[in-house]
Image (tube, rainbow, N blue to C red; front, side, top):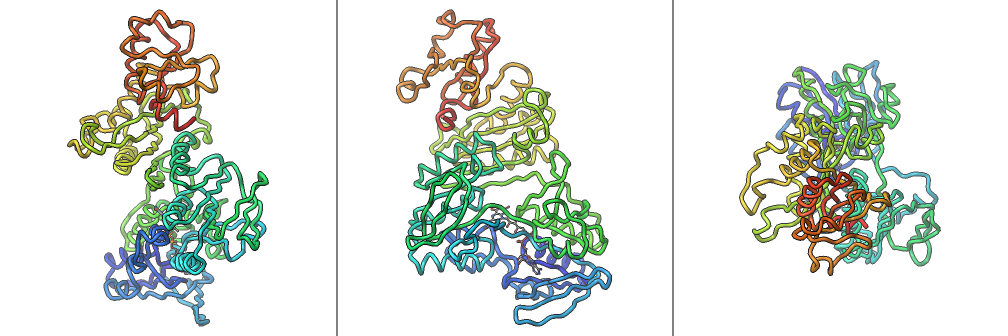
Amino acid sequence: MGKTVIIGGVAAGASAAARLRRLKENEEIILFEKGEYISYANCGLPYHVGNVIENRSDLLVTKKEMMESRYAIDVRINSEVTSINRDSKSVHVVTKDGQEYDESYDNLVIATGSSPVRPAISGIDLPKVKTLWTVPDTDEIKKYIKENSVKSATVIGGGFIGLEMAENLYGLGIDVTIVEASNQVMAPVDYEMALLLNENIRDNGVKLIVNDGVDSFEDTSEGIKVKLSSGKTVLSELVILSIGVKPNSKLAADAGLALNEKGGIIVDSHMRTEDESIYAAGDVVEVEDFIFKDKTMVPLAGPANKQGRIVADNIAGLDSTYTGTQGSSVVKVFDLNVATTGANEKALVRRGLVRDKDYTSVILTQNSHAGYYPGAKPMIIKLLFSIDGKKIYGGQIVGKDGVDKRIDTLGTAIRFGATVKDLTNLELAYAPPFSSGKDPINMAGFVAENVVNGLVKQAVWNEADTDKESVILDVREQAELDVFAIDGAVNIPLGQLRKRINELDKNKKYIVLCAIGVRAYNAYRILAQNGFENIKLYPAGVRFYSSTH
Ligand code: FAD
């Protein structure tokens, strides 16, 4: 019989504990959690603030009592581990009511998660500047909103938690402003994909300020004043700070365990630290990037749960390894869903890859299911892949319906090393309410395959703005142009193109555009077969153009 001590009782820690019990009935397992709750649904917290999840108890997935009775785990809540003594193989514990003791271990699991960052900005410690990370944080925010009948809030940070909070606060009738220091919300997607969210956020009545960081917070008689780098101020009654997280790795650092430059605990593929008796899992560890095989930090629930399970396997003597994180994630932003898997274009560029030399991308508009079946909603897909199509780097999708299933299809394909050709061959379930005979992911494969084979070249989303020599050739009908036309574009409807092709100049660069890209592709092929060499296809059509311009 061995003794395993787990520090941290939520995603990774609780997973490790339950799995270890299933594998080792005679193991002594002690779970220390400094808070009052174990195994709660962090991901549901914004929705409890917004009363979408009404019952607080629904957030408490597995309670202490169940962990004890069903899994025979010795759960010690309100118990913070304050140090690890690797020589004596023991941890020092301080309880909420002030008791202190040491507890020995054979195997130790550090699953301490991460905490919201609070940079040294003047006024950041004001009580009205709150973060949402735990159940007590949620209680506090809800109480504050209720007791003060809060009518306005500023959310600092446009990441997924910031956006979820903005939506939920807005749902409570609160006037919300999002302040984002970088030039886009949702950093995991590329700029042009994030622009689709900007429009939606603003259309839903939330004010969005980008490219403007916070200089200071000041509590005034009118409310809390957020002063921005631009000199602008935003006044509201509540501030939610959501600008990223840092790993809770101080315990590990103090115990002399190796950390990376971001403070992530360094573990091997078995989730073991350099000390063979100490494992670590979840937000607190450095992971391998699945696409590039270099090291990164990805604080997400799925990886944390899986890593906890792997830790338990290894403690129980099973040879189980973690094969890296590809950052698959999905978030609802008002009536849009945005999802990503693998590397985005920013990550490729950061790693020195060059567009049109090492990688390229396609962007396309597809319907969530057959257009003739009621309720089909468009989605925009961006796929990044190597020039030869043999490697898919990643994908991003923004749309109203069916986004999650397509990102998961793509994420799974990437996990198993799919090529662009493989996407065209995927046989995916189809009936009109669910998809089309050619699923959006097949279509992404077809378009990418056409690019790989040289049948078509896609422009980047803003190429017509940056390359002043190029001209947009819009092949939509007059009625569509009456609704939205692009200044300076040449208009020849597809049906007239063969007859009017002489109106075009073979020496000019054309970017061909239509509503969603299908007519433009046909036009492109006509031009290509008539000796036009300087042509590109505008990705995803005019809807994408109008949302990004
Ligand atoms: P945690 O789940 O944070 O657990 C760590 C625990 O360790 C904490 O309870 C902490 O109190 C305890 N602890 C820390 N130090 C000590 C100590 N010294 N002694 C004792 N106990 C200690 N991820 C997604 O994939 N999708 C989502 O939609 C999503 N939404 C989220 C929404 C919110 C509001 C939040 C906060 C997170 C969200 N996440 C989401 C992230 C996800 O919850 C985390 O990635 C995941 O919980 C990490 O698991 P973990 O076990 O590493 O850490």
